Length: 196
Image (cartoon, rainbow, N blue to C red; front, top):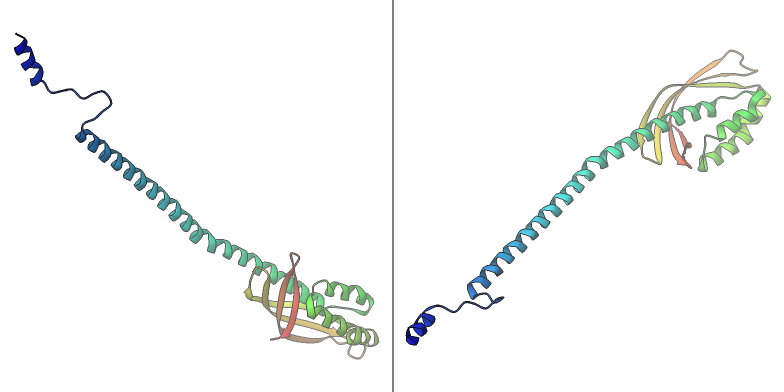
């Protein structure tokens, strides 16, 4: 009888001890773990790709539009400053000459401001007072030639009317001027004023 019990026990395979897997189970677990890790890396790579793609798309889409808006704003501001400054520069009367020239200077900057101040002191003021010169300017047409956030060039077509003691009948003159502008502390100022 004992022999039969021994036979039955030897025929039954030994159960694995708790916590120890068979080699097949260990390989299956390793494969599952590797697949899970690969899936996570693929997911992370996909998310990174999407984030980078969206960032590039935003830069490509919004970058030029922002530049266009800044250029359009600069163009409009420079155009208005050129017209206002040119009128101030070319309009004066003996009775209000000091105020007229101060207003003109407030629209200028740089070397052109220096040049205009010297011209006004040496030529314009003596001539205007001695000959009673009255000048009035208007801008007939204006166009922006180029504009950047801090500099611009504007083409102006100007009509100027002048009277003096020697010529009380008004003399009309039409001219075209290329006006260079520079943004100084947030304000557009004329930096050059050349015949076109």
